[in-house]
Image (cartoon, rainbow, N blue to C red; front, side):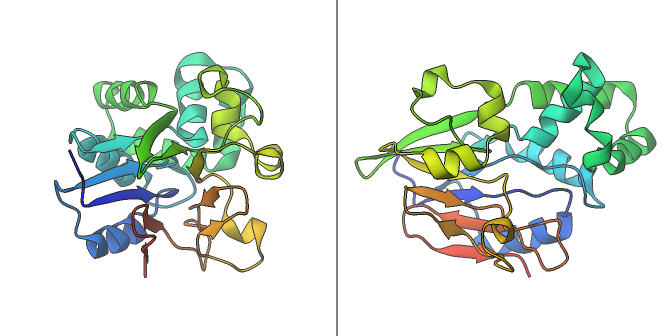
Length: 222
């Protein structure tokens, strides 16, 4: 199917108010294809709402919801243990856990964990003859896509930004744009075909951003 728009939404981090703001602006329909770049939970005040929204909308055939590193930490906390489990609560997971403890029974929690476990780590498309890879954090440079490890796809930062030389366009979140350019809460297109869409959703002046890959149009939350 030829979609009217190919949309990507960056990190959400429990800010359902900002998510609603940007989503209402794009007038999403069945003529569009939407990729969510992960990190639906942690740090905000409506983490459960954001996670449930992602669970609902991802049932549509024209939506792909990726896993972020914060969903990964949550999964490890409840099911697998280890280092990633230990760092979840100090990294905003305490707010998500408080909401889950208050509002979710065991069946609902397990449903959420199954949703997270089933999320793909990347999505690849060919658009206008060019390859696009949508991923939460990035790619290990000089390594084929099919050989990428989970940690790189969910956690990588500087090594990716500084070392990527691939031919594919990479659309990612994970590192807030003001960490790259001070006080910039707007998507950044780097010289090496990387587009950063995490515009600091959880920060005081941050926003949630959506980009149409076909036209380059950008919408942001109020």
